Length: 337
Image (cartoon, rainbow, N blue to C red; front, side, top):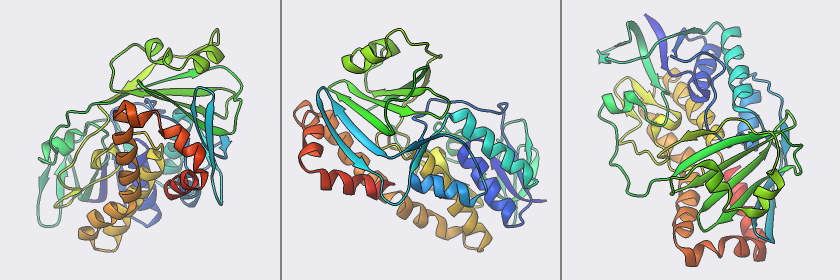
C-alpha cells in the first residue's frame, strides 16, 4: 500500500506529489495525458507562487513580472508588486519543470484515470491502486468530485476563457488587463520572446470576435505569427466540500471562481502543499479550513470584481477608479500576490 495516490498530473497534482515525496511519502501520480500538458491559462505566476515553486526545488525560466496594469482605451492604472517579482511562463514549460522535479524525487507517474473510489478505515482503493490517502487534482470539471457527490449547484453566470500565443517581443514587464464591456483580455509577457493573450467573457464567440472588443490591443497584434487557440470553461465550479473521508480535493477540483484576478497557479500550489502538510501531520480534518483561509482574499476580491464587471454602469468605472485611487488598487493587488 502506497502512502499517497494523486489523481491528476497538472500543477496542483504534481505540487502535491513533490511535497509528499519531500516528506518521505511514497507517491504515485495517475495522469492520462502525456507531458508536457498544455491548457488555456493566463500563464502569469504571482510572487507568492514563484517563492513556493522555489521552495519545492522547482526551477523554471520565464519573463519577470513587475506588477499588474489595468487598461481601458487611453486610460491605465499600474500596481507594482511589492517585495518580489512574478513570472510569465509558458504553461508547458511550467509543467515540464514540475514533472521533472517529481521524477527526481522518486515519484511514479503512470498513465491512466482514477475512478471507482472505495474507502476503508485506513485505506482508499481507486484505479487499481491502494493508498492511505487520495488527492483529487483532476481539474476544473473533476470526475472524482462528481463521483464523490461533491459537485456544487451550477451557476447561471457562465464565463469562458480562450488563450493564444503571439510571436512578438513583450512590450512591458507588467501583466496587462484590458477591459471592455464584453469582457477582459490578459496580456502576459513570456520568457520565450512571445506574449500570451487570454480573453475572458460570458459571450461564446470565436477568438477573433473577442479580440475585436480591444481595438488597440488587436492592432498591436495584427500580422503577428499566432499559435493555436485553447479554451476552458465554464470557469466557475463549486464544490460542496474539500474532503470526503480519505480523499482531499486540491487545485481547480476543490472549486474555482474565476481567472479574473490571475493567481490560479499560486493558489493551486499553495492548496496542494497545504493538503499534503495536513496529511503528514495526521490532521486531514484541518485541510478544509486551511483551504478557506488560503483562498479567502482571492474569493472576496474576485467576487467583487465580477459583480462590478457584470453591470455596464459599474464596469466602466473599474479602470478610472484604479487610476484615481492607486493606493487602493495597489493594496488589492498586494493582497493577492
